[in-house]
Image (cartoon, rainbow, N blue to C red):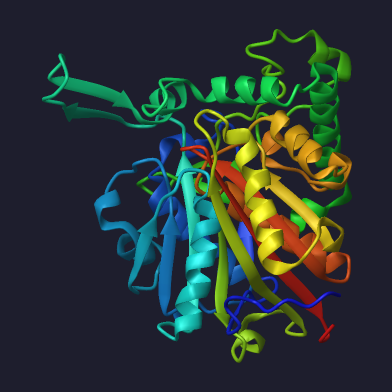
Length: 402
């Protein structure tokens, strides 16, 4: 394995101290009816208990979410109370980059020595997203109402375009072929169902019960509800909403949470079920591309990351990304001359959904688990975010000192 110095040499992710809910599509589960911050805190307690991590061992909590939730003003201190352990912490938000930024920030906390055991918790609920009323004295309408999820998806105030327009524009720039985009989407669904049928997802996804305010059973979150098998003929028959974009080649809104632990290298053995496995963040990079070209930004972030580390795509044992549009992967493949069939081998957000905050956290958890099953190596995680931003990070998984 090629060696490159990690940016946070002290920080480690203990193997197995992670878990994610399934991501049911919006309005398709009991998650549509709960305070997602409270649910996420309680779910983290449940997951850490299953992983045999004493919740009282955490020093600090960093949460990430992008959609306002009731009592969000209180952020991480409130969520930690719901978790059952009153500790300090803070909240982060950067659209769909949130799930990776939180892990990076937790690693920095440990590296600085400020905290030795940092919990990471990301969550979002797109179901029944709130509507805000904003005074706007400079506008001809003195008061403006904003539906947090749908209005932001439909209008980028910096460009005047909708999210889907950036996908179509990028597809035209790179001369993407509709047949290839459909084939890629079909392959991504096939990868997901193969991983599901193999039992791989059972190692990272945790079924969770949802209770109402009286403690009565509302439902059980035990599937990525809304995901169904697609046929290639069915994909090709779908109406094109913009260039190379159909209902089957873009992701869908969903609800969910994901969590993991970051600690220092001396404490790994206290938490990990396999302390011989060493997991650390090597490097991260971010870029911003031209307006309305968000799908190309992740590839440029990866270029910057590889240039900084001296690593190559051939060094990566697992490659996984946040791909709200299938063209993200087609463009990445064109820029790097990389076979998109080698990516996202256990599933991806294109298929299992897009709750924003926890999306890249779940992708990272799946990627690390896959890397362990392959005997270790470099893991590349990347994705796009609102504002035409790309983010990428490399993690190193070593087993037994390799």
